Length: 102
Picture (tube, rainbow, N blue to C red):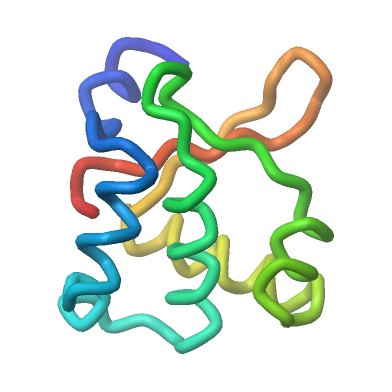
């Protein structure tokens, strides 16, 4: 991730992100219910020191009780909304950065 991505990422901890989202922050976003679940899951896993989270699609799906296709759709919706950024790490695995829009 370059400097542009660094400027967009949130500086909140996973706990703070999750708490804010659960206290009404989710209602600010016009998102599918499954997408909101995925956002909450990513927020709960978010490591502010590393500035990213990197669960597998299967892990996301299993954790929130949706299909892998549903998880992929939710990730796509979060990307389109600008709430997360996605990149590949050195192992060719997806990494997600929660943006400062959250």
